[in-house]
Image 1 (cartoon, rainbow, N blue to C red):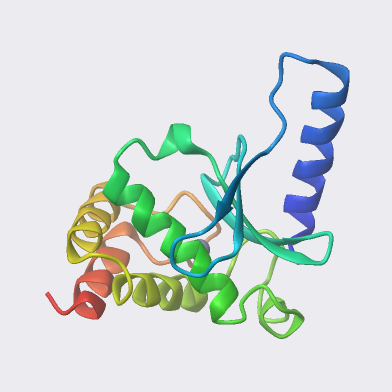
Image 2 (cartoon, helix red, strand yellow):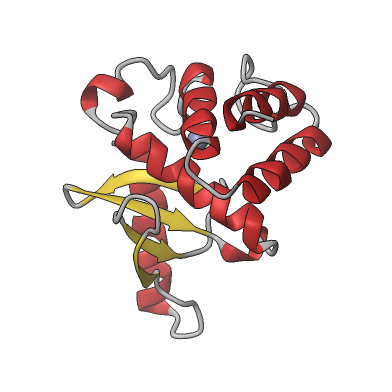
Length: 157
Ligand SMILES: [Zn+2]
């Protein structure tokens, strides 16, 4: 469980309750690749796989994923974190923070997504990560170039 995401959702809920102009998380239905309930909400991470009120959920900030192929890959990546057990206590144990998955988990989730989505979505994701350069997350995270190469390998390019 991501304590950071719970705090974020609590903050969002508090803001939404006090300000009708701020949207609450909008349910989007089950994710295409895993059936896990998905919500649209502002998300500084862009997208997250977390456990909310005991249920696995995916939180997507669509403003950060304008390209549909990129969005498809990102949803599959978040599915992978749930499917591969990264959001279970056993997966969380390996994290040095509760907010970010480990570098290995990120690469595993990318690989699962690359084997699941349409090849075009993997191609777009590989390009997006390559252009990203250093990952704007914790130290030790794989670079954009590493993630790009990993996705291409997993997609069979
Ligand atoms: Zn991830």
